[in-house]
Every structure is written in structure tokens, then in C-alpha cells.
Image 1 (cartoon, one colour):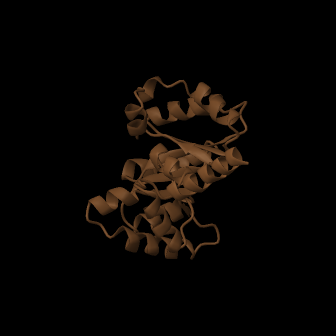
Image 2: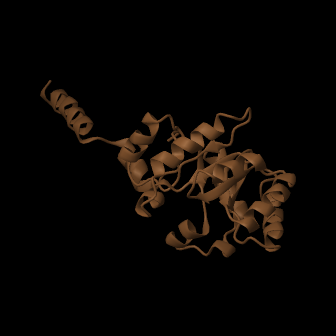
Length: 202
């Protein structure tokens, strides 16, 4: 539809879709995403150990003939943080994921990460003041000439997107049901139906 900038993946989303993450043919995924004309494909490391480098080698080979930019997603824990510079050295921008606190923005900025992904919906469900943390993260990002971009994940509704947009945020990862809610409105549907009825009467 030409609406979306990219696609994101992780082991949990893969499992929900009925796929085993370690069995995914990444060459096929990258080729399909590239064919959609998307700009970025965000792929999470399956583990924070030495196998991460084998996984990156697979992605390096898979993306060789594609135009789409591959972003490697790395969880925000000590093991992931240590891996980030080596993943970047292999030629991949990184996204630091599973963010729950504004302090983690300092880490992402120091690493030179392209993105950080705060889990907005999950933060709210954990009784964390998600809006306050995001305001702090945005303030931290504005102190750098090359800021880490805040890509807000775990969005539960279009209303949450609207609230966040009013605070100046403009990057979101959304589930298909939220995307569907963006595409239609009952009042618009009623107006469009009236157009069709008018044509039938003329």
C-alpha cells in the first residue's frame, strides 16, 4: 500500500505467527521485504552469545543482493550491549530493544545506536509512567548531533499513537490490528456509502 517504512521481527512475533525463529529462511524474508519496496527490515538477534556472529554472517550473505536496509535488533542487557559495537563493525546499524526506562537512552546514545525501542504498552501495564520516561528520552536525544531515534513499540491502539504524537513522537511499530484501525473510520465509511447511493439514484 506504500504506507509503511519497514517491518520488524523478533522471536516472540515469529512464534505468534507459527514460525520457529531459528528455522526462518532469512534470504527469502529479505527478498520479499525488498520486493515490497520497504526501506528497512529490523531483525532481532536470536541469542546474546557467540552464535550472534554466525547469525550476522547469515544476514550479511542474505542481504547482498537486496536494496533494503537491515537493522539488527539487540536487547538492552549487558550481554547485548557488549555485542552492539561488534555488530556495528560488521556493517549493520543497530536498534536497542526491550527498553523500559529513560536511563537506557544514555546507553543507546553512547553506543551510537540508530534506534531505541521503548515498550510503551508493556510499560503502562507494568505501572511505569511511560509518558514521563518517553519525554525524558526525547530530551536526552536532543542533546546529541546524531541522536538515537525513538521507535516506540508495544502500541496497543491508535489513541496511544495520537497521544504520543501530541508529545512530538513520530515513529511507531504497530501490529496489524492497529494498522487496520488506521485505514478506516465508520464515519468515512458512511460518507463513502452515501456517494455510492447517490450514483445509484442518478
